[in-house]
Length: 396
Ligand SMILES: Cc1ncc(COP(=O)(O)O)c(C=O)c1O
Image (cartoon, rainbow, N blue to C red; front, side, top):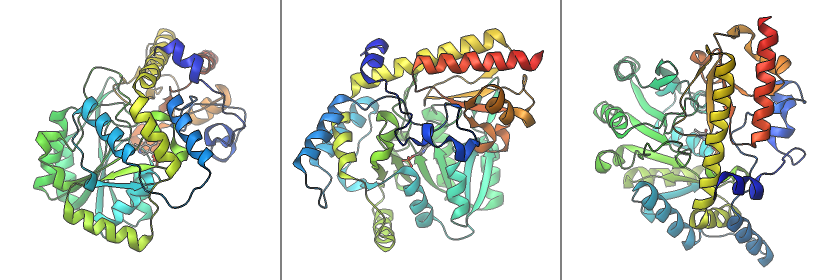
């Protein structure tokens, strides 16, 4: 499906639909009339086969306790194998109602109170919250960057692991917000270091279907032919790809049998939730039939990225825009054109936009904004026009 077909069939207005992104601006931004480009979900309906599958399940009418359908495992495993070469096994699979919920359970499983947990900043802020809310010690290694291109700093990571006696790393792959799809070599270096230093790894791969270049996604499960599987847990979900966050279904993939046993015990103790049947029915259909839909989505994201980049850098060549290898989240450094201390006020009050502010992702995000590109070209054009106008007024 191309972009035009995708937009014609799937674009949908979400204001007044109890959307966090559109209908809950006041709480975060203290304003209602902003154009929302923040929360990482989309203004697109899920693939029609997913909607049909849910409709059929709803028509049945009974929603008693349910199993994960066989069709789910088949469709998800095939999707992962054919697109990314990932080999999965049913016994590795556990389910949750969301990746963040599972991250919290896993931090409890894999560390003790006051243990040090490492993240690579700037990074998705719930990682920090999960660590701190569970009374673990947050340790940060800054990503290096040059002209908006980010990379890991293995020497610093090693130093932090040693100095702080790090027990766990939470990795974002692909990386929100800097848009990197980590190469196998980068992942292998990191995972080898963690193995040698006895640091366990959680790899959050929720963005892995959102690939904008021909750079391949390599799952932590497959790095060096699966060498690090025993040392890691992968969390993933269909929600980012197919816009199904509210359907509350996510994956926890644990190849190590001892770790799995301990996980099952903990989940029992916490009586932790394990996904929803509608979420599973929808995702099974999306994995089975959603490849063409995803192609339409990715074309839309790419066109939106190209548009924003062209317009912003033409007007203000000093603006630094990170290349978008993965995710639908654009990382923009406005520090050369807006005083970072005044950025939030400027974006809200002058440009009328609700975006994720860089500092949410760690102090090194100052001066940046994260723009969600998974929306209609009309919204993107409105946003860019408003931003450029506000910048023009700001300079004069
Ligand atoms: C890296 C990352 N992990 C997890 C999530 C949220 O996952 P969930 O809604 O399943 O908790 C997001 C959403 O933006 C994300 O970017």
